[in-house]
Length: 462
Ligand SMILES: [Zn+2]
Image (cartoon, rainbow, N blue to C red; front, side, top):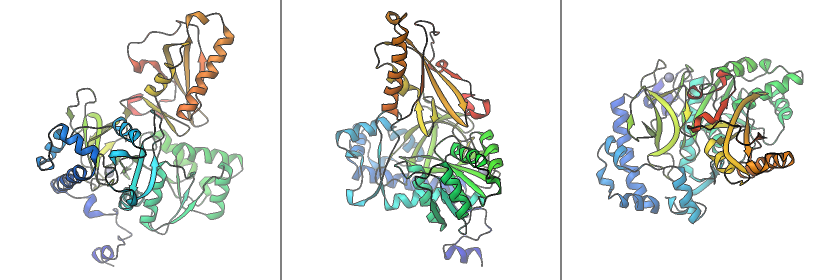
């Protein structure tokens, strides 16, 4: 079958390296022109349909017709971020004035984990779910996954967008899907051995956990039917080469990952060459800024990724600050023209570590410590790695008045741990140390004592 004919039938030639060669290898100038058209349309759409954007644009005197170039878009459309959306939604839950479509058009609802505070509600239209799946389909295809493959989802179907969109991508590819649902780790291993799927979808740490539990059960997952593993939700095989080695060895499989932002898009599948993720530029426009000065930074420099997606018609996000630090590169040995983030996300403008699947931000922890009056504002976060998981221990000081009251220290350890658990839904270790024994740091980042092996830290955190 010729390529043209197979495309006409909606089935890209099995041998092609690309899911959509036309878009994935489009010359830069053409991509720019396409993105400008789509941005102009999006600005008009947001202005006409979303009361939030209407107000925001009016406040700076911006009219949709003012956007005549990519530079206009970058510099005239105000930056926004998660907290602004959450504030709007709190006034009129669940979506408030940020929604651009009537309720009838919303077919799916997800939420962010709330790890920085209140969760952000995310509405999806049917179109949005299809587009969220598209980047996954590109990534699956690039790794070698084909419609004849069978997916196994080792994931409890909560409100986390990452794996829902992975599922939309598997549907887009036309693969069989098996859900592991609420099984325990052993149950997942048994289900994989029984149903013989070829693709495993999970967080990277859970893939390692499953391999370890399987070994205890006397099962060698390297000899299982799994040929590919694909990951999201935590720094994965692209950001952490050690993670790739461990997963690929344990499962005797090729590992891929996708970088997404739940409220924006599943937007950057990993390059099959393994050294970065490619932004799906059909559906997303990205650029980088210096997080302090907000000035644009160029290719090859580290900056904060600012993203605009064409995939969220239900709640558009324009010039959205991701707080992810990335290094952009154009051109890649794999042949894709889509911009690449070398090493995926290199760090956060706000330090973040994923503990048992929950993103824990330094600012969130600091905020919660500050809410307990018997605890001083000095603290240290100690990061270690135990049983293939990142562990965070908070070292804190009781106030001076409690210096000799050890019973009160233990009570405070429990209270702080409970307080964090209630708010962030994750249990962190808490250790009281004598009042005024911790160093007084000027810089917030110095409060992080990272004792994880280097290979398990993101580039900027090393
Ligand atoms: Zn590439």
